[in-house]
Image (cartoon, rainbow, N blue to C red; front, side):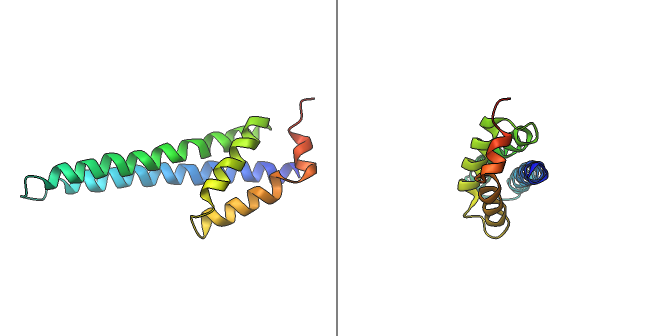
Length: 119
């Protein structure tokens, strides 16, 4: 079970890292597109979309990375954070859903819960 928890930690770190990368790319795309329109409101809308879209992706990815790091260290708060993050990611079919189901199956197991108890 210890290997499953460590694998889960690595998967959440990778998934969160991809989310941050996507946030950066979203910001760069919309910010870059803001220089193209001749319309006076166009750049403002595109810059706003870049900040909000990229920022939200970044903000939602940070807890995923934190949960993954805490799972690697077998921290109880990391287990709880991973369950919360998994619940929020169920709607992101197919990868988020698969990772969330794997998280629920592993972290709700009694054997895995015992790994997070203080020694």
